[in-house]
Image (cartoon, rainbow, N blue to C red; front, side, top):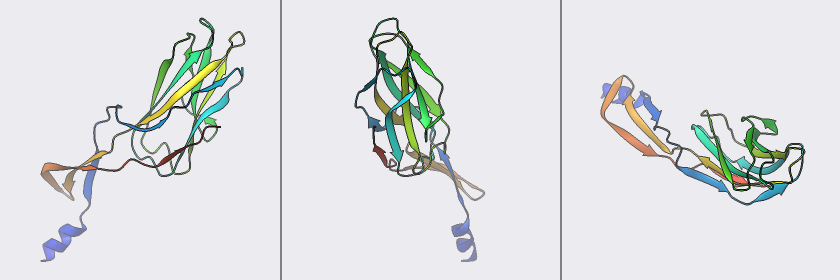
Amino acid sequence: MGSHNKAATEVAEVTEGAFDGTNIKNSNDTRQETSSTSYVKKKEVILNENLDKICRIKFAIQSGVVGKAVYGRIYKNGIALGVEQFWNMEEYSIKSEDFAANEFQTNDLVQIYVKISADADSIDVKDMRFYYNTLDTITGIGTHELVNPLHIKKPSISMTNQDP
């Protein structure tokens, strides 16, 4: 009986499933447009919970005129976080960037800011999407490795789309 109580207090070792970046969990697809030559916020999501998973954020941009440069960038709470993304064609280009687990916490604002080059006409941005896994695996309890790991599916976290 004493060993049963001891086992109950041991900690399970949980590992995140392999990240493949194809599990879409939130989509903010409305199209926004600007002709600003300075970065302006056009897409925004507020996290209602911690995002403790590796995540991928994608968004699509297009230039209003072929050959004229437009730019997009992921921000967190109004501060540039992602790399500057470039495009200069009239069809949409999907931009993608991966972020570490726990990069985004409850009440963080995840945003897409965009701008045009001085000679461009406009930029459209749409399809801001979050991808992450919801599958964890228990591989052991305390110092005991499980012969057959247990796979646990967690629910998606809650996010609220709130474009400006």
